[in-house]
Image (spheres, rainbow, N blue to C red):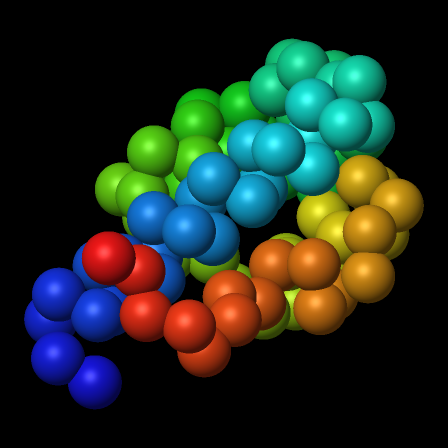
Length: 79
């Protein structure tokens, strides 16, 4: 995977995490209150400044009431 493709997929994941959190009607602070992740770390992930660990992604998917497949980008290239 080239660097541009990696960056694109990381931005997509970040956007999907924000979208799922907002669909769950949760703020970053409310997520932090669950003790799954701190608000500052969540912010870094949502801004693509930090990678998200798969086990953390599983916890966030459960918290946001989304299947893990929700966060996986499709294979269609973005134009």
